[in-house]
Length: 382
Image 1 (tube, rainbow, N blue to C red):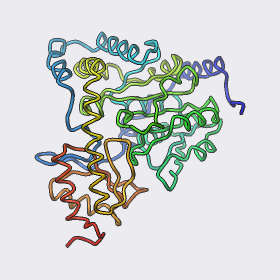
Image 2: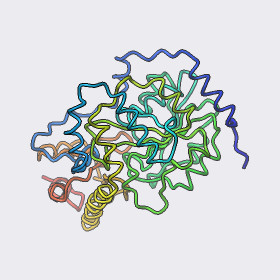
Image 3: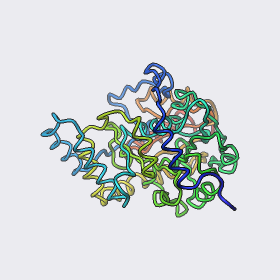
């Protein structure tokens, strides 16, 4: 099938037009209004398995780097940012011009929306998925198009491709997906990329890529040269255990990254997290260790759910969605009363509970509480 859309030169010219145009950033209050709202977290002494965090935190080497960074804490992070970009570029074997940093991958998503959306553009995403791209699209006064997932909780790429037109500025594919934990195969993404117009930027969010062990899964970073409209987002929040320190990055063509950098907040990346991140990239053994621990806990949890005859979505992430048979709100509250913080309610999955992987001891307490709150036979607990 012949690929529709722009050739590489035309694509570069279109991105250049974005850079050449003056864009007024939305008001701060409007940005706040578009943020997904989360319940306040009272974490003192509670088991926190609600936000897909890594309970083990940074590696020992990364912790040491954080401590040592105090000697340069008085300096702006410009030099460290340049070193960080260089480290990521070498890690992924791309030029430094193809790397953008963000204050967590959330800033990367905002940068993409700001660069490629506007009142005359739309964004296409699955439902449910991570909401940041859709929320920031509202700030840009773009039209958000949500495409329901399949009955198996998979991205419906055929339906998403059908909704992707010349008016589409951005397509968002969270892979593995949050909150369902499901994946899109690399083959399927390739077919999707061949089908959609090259004028539509496709952002593949690989925040949870390190937890995926399905052979069909694969990162698409190596396709940046093949598809000039492809962007890949990564984060140090998950496998590297630095969710509270905020560092993410994007890989794309030089033209794409230049367009995104135009809306990056100045000096938004702190020196401590970048110092730790550089060490983490050179510590593959720690990644393997975290994969073994977290995926092992996920497997244990799913075995316990199967023993109870519970329905859950097979996950390729550090969290699992469990069907609870009724509105999840009072169930979340019941866990809170037991000082166990679990995932929030998702509007399109109101009978599902998302639980992140904690330590083995924490997950044992979760399962015990689950059996009290939602007995295996599905009856309401007294």
